[in-house]
Amino acid sequence: MNDRVGKRLEQMTVEEKAQQLTGVLPQEPRGLYEVHARPFEAAIEPAGFTSARGLFDQPYVSEDPVTPLSVAREGVEPADRLARQSIVLLHNDEMLPLSREVARIAIVGPHAESLADAVRRLVPHAEVTVAPGCGVTEADPAGLAAAVEAARNAEVVIVALGGRGGWFSPGTEGEAGDTANIDLPAAQVELVKAVTATGTPAVGIVRTGRPFALTAVAEDLPALLHAAYGGPRAAGALADVLFGEVNPSGKLPVSLPRHAGQIPIRSGQRRGSGYRRAATDPHKGSLDLPSTPLYCFGHGLSYTTFDYRDLAVAPQRVDSGAAVAVSLTVTNTGGRAGTEVVQLYLSDHATGITRPTRELADFARISLDPGASARVEFTVELSRLGHLGRDGDFVLEPGPIEVQAGASSDDIRLTGAFEVVREGDEAVLLRHPALAGVPDKLDRLIEPPRTAHP
Image (cartoon, rainbow, N blue to C red; front, side, top):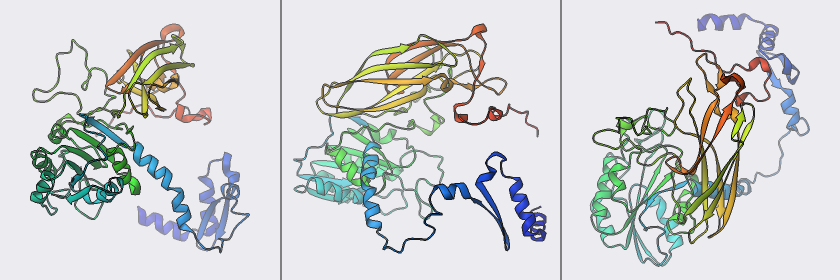
């Protein structure tokens, strides 16, 4: 088939190729394109876009010297900010932040070397010993005895764990790098067990690009940080969080399971399935493990505390084409400044199609000094609650909607409700929010389900 198409293209003239390309362009914006007949090719140039970018005004590249350093410096601040905001404090038994007065620090684990210089900059007076103890996987060189000795002689141990992505070396993730076992590699678990057995207080850091099941090490480490691959500023951001220069504010974008047997596990599982079930449901989880995730979607702690109060939902009865205003007050009740990510969830009790038990509708980052309060306001368009109906249409069914606000999907602090009303109590066909500004003829975003044939 491909050979026949290729031969046909070879036989076509340049003008015929241009006509073919013109035919596939949409009718309305065709004026934005110019079709050229050039030797051996028919090229479409988005002339309107080119003109809008000013390329017709300056068609030639500047001969001035290239200054990549000045451009690179512009990226330092956002790289720092994003690296810091992405760090999640999973748990903390009054271990963090570390004291700047500590005199002897051991850094162990496969990512120890990358963290050492950043720690030395923050505590220049401290003796910092680096002993990786193991690699990312069992295939890497190990030196467990040296790591244990370094931990025994230190006042505090930083255990830098995690994965390694890429195509060209054995790792834990990446394209064509799936694993059936999602546990932290066994060599790293062994390192944690051996280091914590010394009795030296230890804090763990997991640097990864995909979820690990951390059940084997979570109870051994009195404090645990989760850090996505944070780019060139990641080490400095981690050191800042460890020693309290930065108050962590990251939230998990996924649920971290206890075991591979829980997969799939997510916050938005449908009502009556997953780990959120009614009190009357006889299924309470597995016989050997709780059914809940180890750390839920949206989870993330801080070095301060936040109080939620005064939830307001208006109006209480809403037409399907309107919006709902949700507001609440958040107060920093701790002793230091911090940033909270306030999360708004909705629970649709529609009867026609089983809906997720809890869906994230919106969130807001707010920074507060100790004792300060802020009113957080959300506006939720009801089209956000739309879903595919039984006929494949994008619909919203009348009925009660529960409003939930909190610090994570499993840490709901305030609840309220409103009701979607419509004359006749029939589901209303909605316009999908992704189609805003698109002509009405494209209202149907998804085709109805079709019967599969063998």
